[in-house]
Image 1 (spheres, protein in one colour):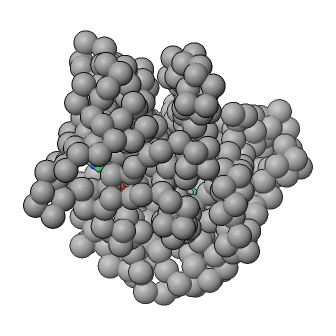
Image 2: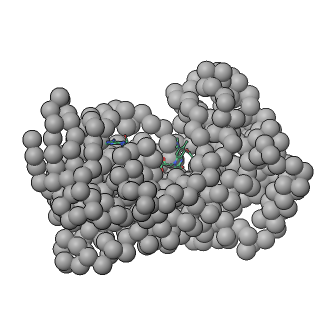
Image 3: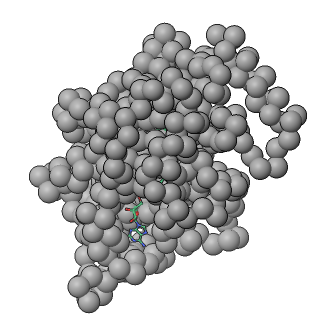
Length: 391
Ligand code: RFL
Ligand code: PHB
């Protein structure tokens, strides 16, 4: 079966669904292809903190009703080291806030709204392959229900995450990856218990990193860092709660309610940027083009800023016959990506114990936290990055 559209979007994660809705709202024809089932996509527990770049897109789409009703605005967050707690007062320092609303919920809102808005999402699309991306008549092939399909388009948007086929379609002679892999992963636990604190706490304890986060006032999300060799089977819930209580310190531990996990997983930490983010008629967005370590909560928000730029560029092309923004997309998106990469990398360095670090590196961390605790300028730098740099 063959069909034709303006834009084929590969991947129905937050980047692909947001882009699809934005293009439909601009009257641009598009189709989204997703390898997994809707339930599988919704079962991935990931981001929890949204910048205004993400909440503004939901508002622009008129899909913000549940987010506004159930999301939690946070005025600040905390950096701790077992002895002190340094509060970063986002609202006072920047006049802005962040929204705690899970990636699962954003994805669900976008998924539920798709049929009513005429956004076609094809789930369980297998063997998606990109063809002729260097020309102006690219196409996609895939199979579904045992049948081969082809979709011709003017552009292909690769929103297919770190392991998808889009980035791999760009020849090695053109693309350049930049990467840092960290020597630990984050073990996350989700449980239906009230959070231990009304704001997030990131801690660098001598036993390692811990983060107290939440999805709502009844659902908590916690993380600890573990060596990459650890297996989730070796971490029964009690062992995780015990370790969290030690690393987060007595005050947070006193407020911590334990409960059975509804999800647990270990995610490796990586910094990665692929340049350029456009090749011919293929544009990359979100995790397909870049990964940040989760310290700083930037991944989904970067996907949102990419999609914001990409929608502008595609709108200029289809509505005003202007191809300049398409040509400039990669540079524009990368300028913001690299700044978020820098922030996530520096907060990761500050808050984790690296196996190769010695006493000197530890003193550097202590000095940096001291500086942050005592300097409004240092707090401002963290705050303006945490709430999100301008798009
Ligand atoms: P996704 O979400 O990976 O979606 C890509 C989609 O593409 C599909 N796909 C394919 N479809 C068709 N054919 C193929 N061959 C395909 N291959 C793949 C996949 O099935 C999937 O549905 O990428 P996207 O849309 O770019 O979104 C990026 C975000 O998911 C990611 O950056 C964030 O989750 C990162 N992240 C966080 N970001 C934040 O902004 N704030 C946070 O608080 C935050 N916390 C986190 C995080 C990521 C984490 N993990 C597990 C990596 C916490 C964690 C633990
Ligand atoms: C989360 O709640 O999942 C979360 C919050 C903050 C981060 C990373 C993850 O920096």
